[in-house]
Length: 296
Image (cartoon, rainbow, N blue to C red; front, side):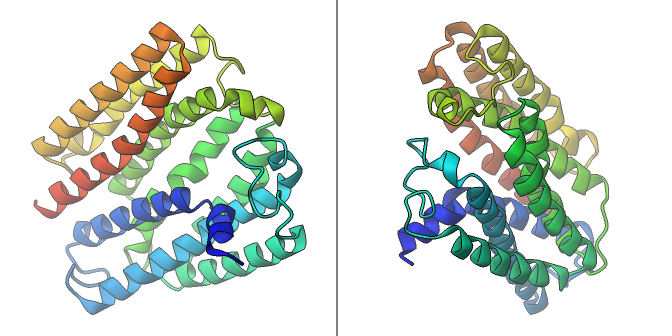
């Protein structure tokens, strides 16, 4: 298999974003527990387990994407952005894709489960929810975005739980999950707005109303407004300082402004700017959370 085909099969950019998110949460978890979980931030044990998370998370996410493409292979053939994926283009059979997905899923789950059982269970749950709930719902109802936002936000939770030998979900874990969960909505809807013509070829219904209209834009704008107070939860809960609060407000206001422009113009160009804004928003906020938390 060519690298380009493998990259398309596992949706490389999306998978790397997922791994990045989980990694940030993992390091925050180690720091949150005073370095008494997998060792300090400078211990060999901690970084070996971080590597397990990265490789395991990559494999699990790749497996979920692989299963998604096996299920949607006939639909991928209809859309311009997906018709060159290896199974849709006929360079790989569905059986080969399924076997590869199963192999990556089992190997990834094993690695994550070796950190603690809850991490392994959450990874299996994320695969099932993404491939077998979100995927079929995309053609039935815009509720698919809500369902998809759960596995989309689970990497932040999985990474945090993986940062502890016994695995537990606390206030910080839920905060990380909440930020990424709410972020999913403007992120998904901006992409859906840009690609709506292509999505319609496969009968995907991802915009709030199913159409590029004012109501969909208002709902998208509302989601960015909700994200502002959610992004400040670390500050309100005394898990982050003033630097995190200021950066979160600035990034949220930019995001809100971009969503307002979409609501004002209803143009694809405005949705594209919001989409690119979402790509910057999450990594910046997560990195500032990490550096602010480590510096406490």
